[in-house]
Every structure is written in structure tokens, then in C-alpha cells.
Image (cartoon, rainbow, N blue to C red; front, side):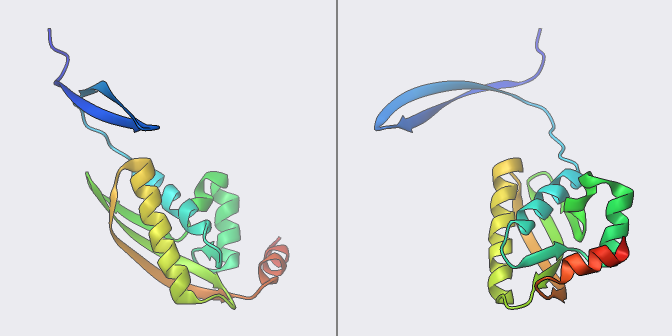
Length: 149
């Protein structure tokens, strides 16, 4: 009785100069990673870059959305993705901090997002489109959020 296709492959593992064979079984099947999961990974990766203040548009809109969506949605603000079987197209909206070099921030964001997507999901970032939507001045975000509350 066959449950699904099983293929065997041999991989050489190089560790401290030693080579040893590792046999692994791969069971065929479809894997689907939801767009929301990919968007969360992208949002968290972009937020790791120094000079990125926030994802998405405006502090007031962000505060209202955070209150309604809870903590799970915070990483997806300003992120939209189209996920295929092996590739993803990413659209990001960023608020950047005044004083940082915007082209350098965008280069680092693209590198980090592409790396995280590959590491975590195995997806290749076909496009990473970044739209800088606002400029935030140091110390400004705490003032805006306290005014909203």
C-alpha cells in the first residue's frame, strides 16, 4: 500500500572536515504558506533594520488598527504580498527616521526581507517594492501615540 511518493536522496554533510552520508526521505505533498504568514515575516524582517520607524501609514491609523487587530496584526501593517509556489512579490510601505540615508535603508530592507523569506519559507523574493510614505523625527512617535490615547 502506497501513501504517497517517497523519494530518497543522499546528501553529504560536511562538519569539521568530516564527510558523512545522510539519507533522508521526502514525502510528496502540497505545502501552502498563507499570505498573512509571509506578510508577518516580511514585516518583522523590515522592522529589524535601523532607520525604519514603522510599517504602513500614519501613527493615528496605526494606533486604531493595532487596537482593533491585536498584536498579531502589527507586523503586517503596510505589507502586501503575492505568494506563488516558489516565489513571492512583496510591497512594503515604510516610515523612516529623519537623519538616516533612505537609499541605504531600502537596500538593507530588501536584503533582509529576501534573506528571511528564503530562510524561513524557502520562497524567493521575485520583487520587493518599497514605498517610503512618511518621515518620522526622533522622539516624535511617543508624542503622537500618547495624543491618540
